[in-house]
Image (cartoon, rainbow, N blue to C red; front, side, top):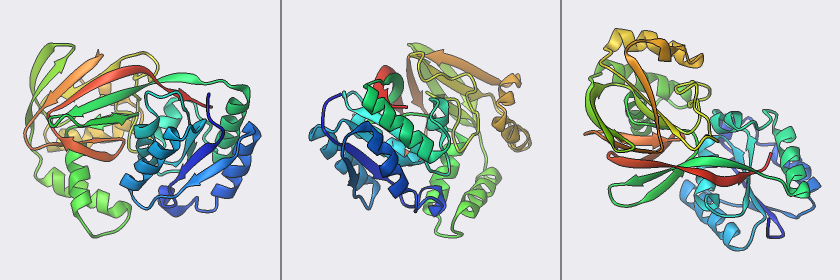
Length: 299
């Protein structure tokens, strides 16, 4: 690993602000790596990506994301495909990527593990997914791309100003269920076309999203493959009964649910905005490719 400093991107609002006092301890724990630690200042998602890109360009030995999957997503845009190390200190509402790749769940333990990995110059290669939009824009993601009902819920919640906090998401679910309709999709998995009508469609590099919902329970971020799930027409009642099973991943035993694997996936549908790692990407169609070993994970 090159560079002489560790860049830290911290989201003070991650985990609904529960971890605001965490940063000094994280900095101390990272210090066992023997390199100075630089806190990156950002006030928006775009600024977060810009300061991470600048740190990598300056030769940072590593970029460390302190937060949840959204913070990880921002940092990955700069680190993916480079030789800079990448570390995650889980401090968000949803820490699905950290859980999938074996990061300690306790934040200070995770930070110390990153510091020790830097000191010992060891890293683990982990896959990422690379999404390309119809305009040719590229976005990396680490966990799951939602392209069905959950994407519609996210889009509605982002348009709502009230209520604040998690209740807004709960209300968005109720409102989207009230207007639920299956959509026509065209999926191409390694060139093989699938035409279907569905409410649930997702592509995953990791097993879970949304803070532990195991939408793709067998997804492995080190196997060079993407897992793809879709369900035949479910309807409101069946979808409502299926959703609680996501926590255990048992929904995949439902005969209406199909899980396939591919290296390259294209998703086409009208009226859907794709969300990856909980972040808004772009309207479908989206082309998604698994990039093996795209990051050097420190843990």
